Length: 261
Image (cartoon, rainbow, N blue to C red; front, side):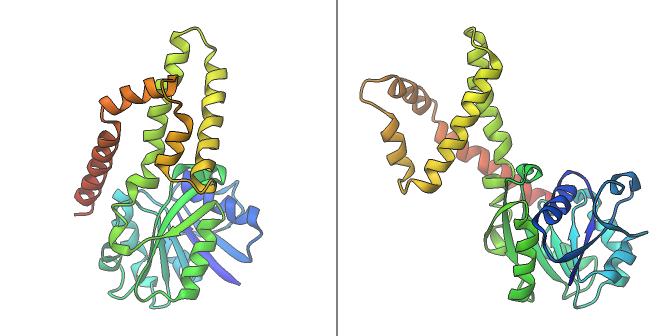
């Protein structure tokens, strides 16, 4: 049986632990958190410190805040071996950073998750380190996949992918706010508007992934000539919404590189 150690049991770490438990995976989970109270309700073996967890487990999920990761890795470095596999969900952290605080040839898998994994509906990008075996990577995918879907991207694109799935929920929520606020301003019940718009988001996502149509074809399908949708689209095009989305993605990516220095 594989042993997985989880360092950090905040929202994301807890979501992964609960996802594993719900999936029925044949894996024994260990955990450590400086706030021991967080561990009491989780289905894990509690470890007294970081080093004990690493000594006990082949796979170590790094789920702490990126700004404290360096000090956490320094605490556990003496327990790391060439067999240890780090699975990092710390945004913007590189494999080289993890190696610089542990051992030179540490095995590292990088993950860019998103907050919907707290509902089992995550979308996580994953990158396989050069010295990570396919079997090890497959296990890591099954761990992260217990909370949603996973897609593999090159290691050197893990900062660029952040805006696509990691930050994009916030962008989508802001977009949703415009529709919900408009409904309230026009005397429509906010809860009804929220339910209708949310269901429309889910349905539209299914059309993107399951219809076989391109994005442009799907837009055209909704847009009757001279109709209401066209009138709204003209305003969005005039405001260069696609350009602004790309600008937001560029700003997000630029910041990821700044944080990685």
